[in-house]
Length: 245
Image (cartoon, rainbow, N blue to C red):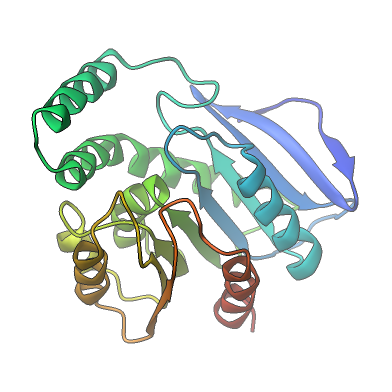
C-alpha cells in the first residue's frame, strides 16, 4: 500500500493511496495516534469516483461526527483507473439493445454482476490493508453503497464476514437476489419510489431477498438521483447503533 502526502482540513485527515492498481482515499480523524476505530467502506455510484462530492461529504461526517475512518476506491473503469475494453463493448451493446426496446434494468444488473466479480476481491484486499494501519485498527466494518454501490455492495457484504452493518439501495433483484439471501447483518435499504432506472418491484424483491433479521425499508418520493439528504443523517445513526458499543 503506497500513500501520497496527506492533507488535513476541519479535523479530517485525507490520504490518497494505491494498492496495486487500485487507487483509493482514506479519511480519518486528524492527529490520531494508534487506535482501533470503526471503518466504513463507501461504494460510489456509476460514472462517479472515490472523491465524488457526495462520497466525500459522507466520509467527512463519519469522521467528524462519529470518529470513524472511511475509505473509498475507484471501481474499475472509473476515476483514475483505465478504461476496460470489455466494459466499453458491453455498454455499447446494452445501449443498442435498449434502443431496440429491451428493458434497461436487467442489462444494468448483469453488467454490475460482471464488475462485482472483480471488485469483491479488490475491496476485501483494501480492508486487509487499511485495518492494519495504526490510526485505523481492526475495528468493526460497515458498508454504504447505493445504485452501482448497491449492485457491487450486495455480493461484497454477502462475501465479507467483517461487515457488521450495511446501507444499501437504489438497486434491484435481477442479479443480486442470490447474494442478498446470504446477507444476515443489519441492513438499511433505500428506495426512490419513482426510480426511473430500477423498477420499484425489483427493489422491493431485493429487499425481500435479504436474510437479515434486522432490516428496514426506507422509501422516498422522487427519481433515482433524488435521494434526500435526511437519509445521510439517518445512516450515521444506523452505523452508530451497529458499529459502536
